[in-house]
Amino acid sequence: MTTEAPAAGRLVVIQSNQESARTAARVNTDRNYDSKGVKKTMNLKNQVAVVTGSTKGIGLAVAEALAQQGAHVVVCSRNPDEVQACVDDLSARSKGRIVGRKCDVREVRDFESLLEFAESKLGGVDILINNAGIGIFKPVEEMTVEEWRGVISTNLDSLFYGC
Image (cartoon, rainbow, N blue to C red; front, side):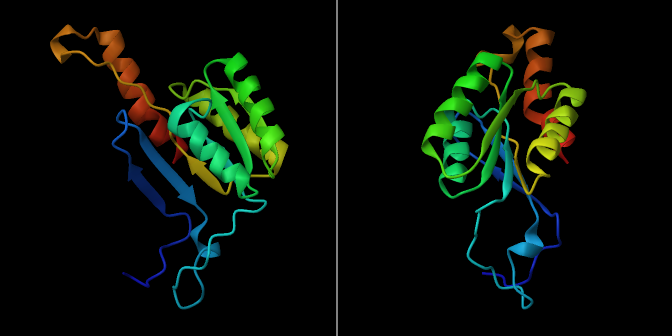
């Protein structure tokens, strides 16, 4: 175990083995470590978290866990109806404030607008969980160029946009 504090704003990448989901979290780490570099207990109350791909699966579970701990959460998906249903459901069951917006993380302008939305509605972003991901489960030689680009844009480009 290391006791050295990471630099503020350090990018922490976590890879999940479920359906090739990749999660990257940008955390304001100087709040999480004391002056000696020892990790403090994480207090998520009133922290603002943006979770992409958060209307189902792993993203929904992460958004729900953050909200249960008192974080204010921004949920998003490409489907606006799913976003609204998620906001309504999580708002009824959580301690934190929940807001949501349609966002196609493959598009840099959509991603930028999502972060601007978080800033305007909740005052900023403390935690970013880049959870959105897709998979085309067939041999690569059977994939179309459009399918390939969709996977790369969703799973890789969106991580870059969040940095």
